[in-house]
Image 1 (cartoon, rainbow, N blue to C red):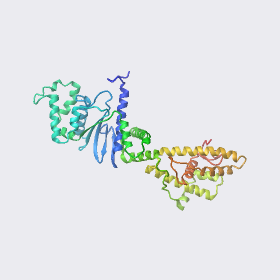
Image 2: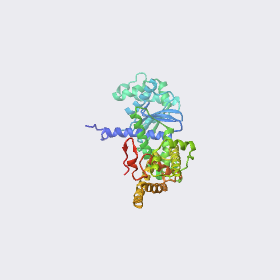
Image 3: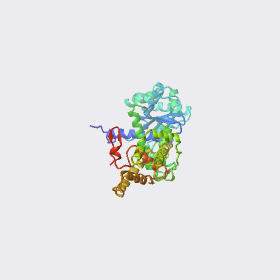
Image 4: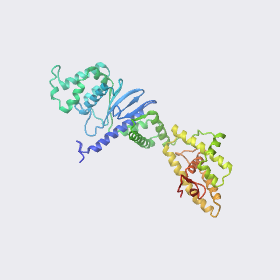
Length: 402
C-alpha cells in the first residue's frame, strides 16, 4: 500500500507535486535569465545555474504538508547542512549564491533572520542568537541534549560548523516565498512582457511542455539536465510569435538561387522533379519549382532559427496543404474525367500552387506555399500524376497516397 502523509494525501502525489515545483522554478529562472546564463536541474542542487554570470544553488520546498521553514523544521536545517557539506566537498563552488524557495507563503523567524543578514556582523550576531536558542549558554550548552534526535542530526551539523563557513553561506543566502501557485507566478512574469493578456495561458502551457520534454530527453540520454538561456530564448520568442497576431506578414530571408545551385539541384534527381517529369512539365515549370523549393527551405530554416515561427506551426501548415491537395484532387478528378493523366496532373499542380495559405496566421512570400507543396511532393505526401504512388517507389516500398 502507498503510505499516507500527514496531510492525508498519498506520498506519490506529494512527490509528483514537489518535482513539479522544481520544473516550475526551472522555467521561472530561465525567464529571468540573461544571455550566456544556464539553468540546471538536480545538478549541484534542486535547481542551480548562473544569473548575470553569478552562480546560484536553490533548494525548492513544496510546503504541501507542513511549513518547511519553521524554526524547528528538519527541512530548514537539512538545507543549510547540505550547503555546508557541498561547500566543504567542493561540489558547490565558492562565490555561489544560496536560495531557499518555499512554494507556500509560510513564515519562519530564523529563516527570515538569516535572509535579512547583509553584513558579516549581522551573520555573526544571528549565529550567536541561534546557538543560544538551541544549545543554551556557552560553554555548558545545557539545552543541546534536549533537541529531538532527528532535528539534532541536522541542527548540530550547522551549529558545529566554523563561523567562517557559516557566515559565508548566510551572507550569500536569500529566502523566497511563493503564493501557493508557482505557475501563476510564472504567468505574471510572462504577462510582464508585451505578449497580450489573452496569449499568456497558451504561451505558459507551450513553454512548460517544452521544459518538461527537454529535461526528460536530456535525462533519458544520460546528459545533465542543463538548458542555456539562449536555447530557451529561441523557443520563447517562437512561442510568443506563434500566438501574437500583431504582425501580419512574415519577412523573407531567401534570395533567388544562383545558376550553379539550380544545376546542382537537377543533378540530385529530387523526387519532386521526378513528379513533374511524370506529367510532362515544361522547363519553365521545372525551374520555377526548383526556385520556390530552395527559397522556401531557406525561409523555413531562418524563421525557426530566429524564432519567427514555432516548429509546431510548420506541421500545422503542411497538414493544411495536404487537406487542400486532397480537396482539389477530388475536384480535378471530376473536371478532367476521361482526360490523359498528364493533363490531370498539370491542372492539379496549377490549382494547388495558386493556393494562398497563412502560416501562423500570417502572410508568407509568394514562393513559400508553392515551395512547400514541392517539399511535400518530394516526400510523396502529395503528387500530381493520378498514379504517382504506383509509379514512384522509395526503397522498394510503394507509398500509399490515397
